[in-house]
Length: 73
Image (tube, rainbow, N blue to C red; front, side):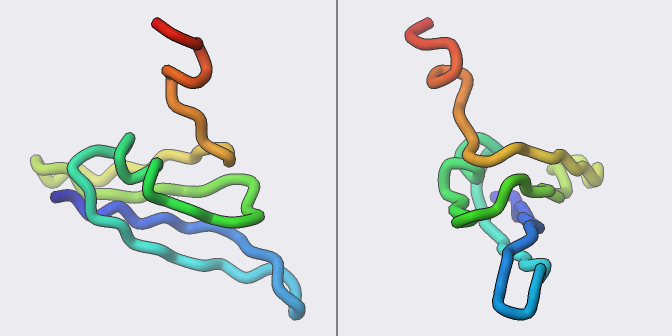
């Protein structure tokens, strides 16, 4: 299992606040499906691969899988 760290901005009464949520999953696709951010527009995902390589990626929300974007393949 790989630990994916999701960093996103959330609007509160005091303004914007950064929140971090960690999800353990076998793939980035499954971690993105399990992640729920509420009203966030984008999310930064950080993880370390099995070969100990550090990686980051930014996604627009709400996230749609390739199957949802392209229709039935």
